[in-house]
Length: 298
Ligand SMILES: [Mg+2]
Image 1 (cartoon, helix red, strand yellow):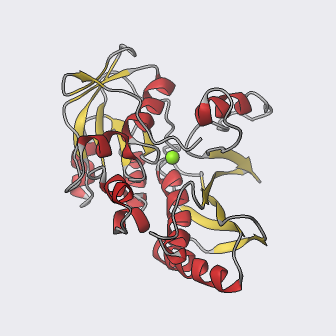
Image 2: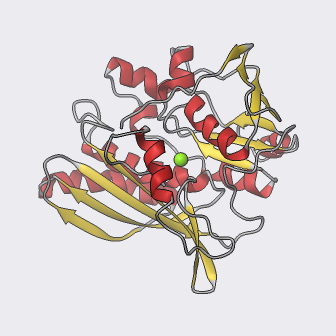
């Protein structure tokens, strides 16, 4: 669950921490602000819920992406947040501002394609006027699964770390201002996330802001460090694209050794990149300190 708002003090992540302090009242087992999705008790069961908005001029440029691309991406990135909990999004609500009827139809052609591809129908939302194009999506999925949804906070010393694919392709396209499938039509790693949860993943996150920033969220929440040997870099992309570019929507998975072979046996990609260490001040990639680079839009 991410928040976008006023830029004073600490950026988006500082703002999220302050907002998290405003709300109490969560029951046992519920998860509120600060993970990829919330886990809430509803009617005797539990539901995972995530929301993310894409804003013209901030998250996309309509000279590069079509409105259909933006629609696809808006649903896909939300499903990616649920995948990062090991959960499947099954219903969505969508609020759109700043488009006329033709624009809404174009946007919704992409939303409906993603909805069909990932089995997540839109069940409501809103259409409003506005000064720029904004698409805000909320996705819901069942949390009633065992083992429970995977949080950012469970990584343990000795865990291995994997990513589900090469990094940097979207950043490469963004830097050049060119269309690419990686940038326009990301595929949420739903099967990988669910399988990793079933195989005992201890912590997961999807790479949206940038690998280093997103891995840092796991390390901070878990109170651990990391020792990374390598990163898989997409064709043509630079190391900087891969470490800090973002918009990859691959999963970072932490957990015991068996997860790698388990995912491989299911035909799913899991590329080992290093391990979790106990000292939270140790954050190394190929012998050099790993920063917290990530794309900041705040
Ligand atoms: Mg996320």
